Length: 367
Image (cartoon, rainbow, N blue to C red; front, side, top):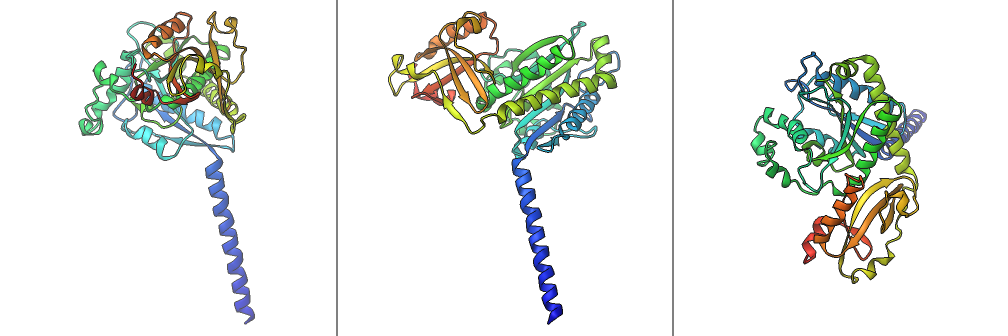
């Protein structure tokens, strides 16, 4: 009887312990900030060619692994890699890994190439306007599709060589564009301010690998393997450590900004919507920037632009130029914003003061 009691007690303790571990694991998995690091190319896909012998697939992998090492020092971050060795991962499977993990960020690492001695870094977010800007970059990064078996079936007629095909890209990433731009800006700023490297800017392109992700996503061109000096830097341990460190720092800065007031979700400075349109009408604005800082809505803070409004979502302040109920007028507003240097600006729609999908707005408006 005594033995049975002891066994029962021990079993009870084991169950409690196991339940505690399971519960802690679930909490841990749920609460961690998940970053998917995607080392571009790999295996039979070497990436950009370089006459100096620098291999993009190897450089991208080493940098991605080093970024992961930095991030994994933070106990609140979980890192997932699309590849950790020199293997070929189909393009369609890379974003799928991030989506299945319910990731908070997707960061794809690449190297650039050009027939000249061009140099510098670039970080891309999705071109949700499908304007075919930076088409050659998109074409080069998307062409890996042709190395895959049954690519016609998997990509449903998507042709990396066709601008018309890219126009058909949906607005699936629209909701995450501002966060993606914020992350891209933080990373590029670190390259410039800390590493003193040349930044070619935050840009937009129709890239399959970030188009298919359901979270903020960026593709980083860490430099040109076709530039003798920069290629050597990218290929060096010193260069890879420095690049990885500043990308990791950018991700950490982004997380801190997002974590601030994460439960807050409210709108500011859009009470004048009714003066432009009736309650049931759609209002279009041009988003020109996103920041963790609240700026005064004065022209001197926005390169001379007037009619600036602001929205706060989570830890981000989003700034908009102009307002109109006529979609045709947004082209002029966008051109005006870009003439002031806001090259990554894009159209956002509101209804009754609430932001809605641009796709839904265009379906419901008669303009």
